[in-house]
Length: 483
Image (tube, rainbow, N blue to C red; front, side, top):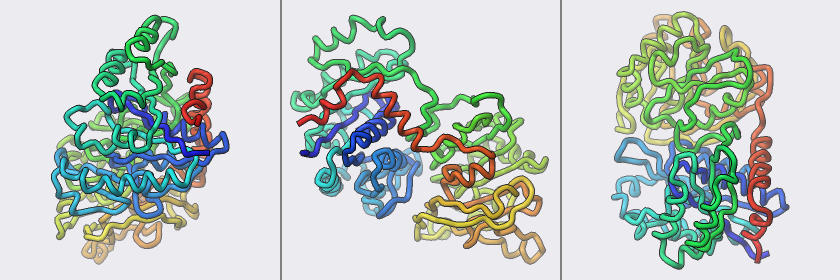
């Protein structure tokens, strides 16, 4: 068959583009087609290691849903915010210092050829390419320099769905306004409107969908009910901020939600475990009563450590640890747990650590980006269940962490529980720091810690496909890829 490109656009950020794209990838893969996802530019500190470097986590999950091997062409441009006005630019999987220092509006001319080439290559190799847009395609101040929405749609001649979050209110105005602001040739690519996160009786929407079709010529092809627990992590941030668990709560896990939190998607499996309540903690009160306190990754470790202290969370974490509570640091969180951050290259910043592990971290110019398979050594105390457990994950870090020389000479030595400096435990056994992301996506780790297996990603992807197959108008998904 001739390759078909299906594109998911949104009226706003957070409208539901990422999960709908993931669902479409699995739907078309289940039809026996060769499928690949694509997003030209992604802004997120949630990244995954793939062939050729790193891409946004959303495209990583979409590739798994498509039953395809993830690679950098699926997300050729990744922007990783380091501050409110600065981002690290990753082009085709590799950090580009030149692009990172270039004015934002000037980048499109330089990156579009590689974006187009990546898309062309995926189109040449697949039956269907499912493309995700970014933000809204009707940001008229950005239209001239667009490299992620309608420029991509035109290049691919994609058949587009435009999704809106009806729970926010104003959904029909969002859909009509977005359509109306597009030039005629771009409007022609919109094949359907999707109402996402609807609560209640869909029949009460009449006559609005027909009125909208009369104005635009575009049908509303799906009304998707509100679905809180589909199991796929949010793409960009801590949107799902409610604390809840399936069944009676027997373990509360507080994850510190600092401003530059990264790779938060790796904690989604914890939310899927019955009896586990996950809390995104921003204040000491959020940590009260937690069984575990987790310090996740950070795109700006020193700055997030300063924020943590401003919030008084340093004292809350120290008190939790002093009472024997379990503490876990992942990547940047591991670095924070040590005695000091030393940055002689201006990568992240110097800072005193929290002092819960006798370690020191130095930031190197060279960035470690790799998949890692390893085995835990002997652990004791709160983390003893991980002893001897094999684990697979990924590393993305500039920091290199080792024993604090002076403290080690005085007898204060951390137990190295993963080889090559990837994991450390304190003498009391309740504080653990690891560089390995993705531990909670490994069923061996989950079984060791919880004695049960959370729903697998395959279960999640099939559930997403089942959902859209149930709620999208019959025949629409097939028409999008018809000759």
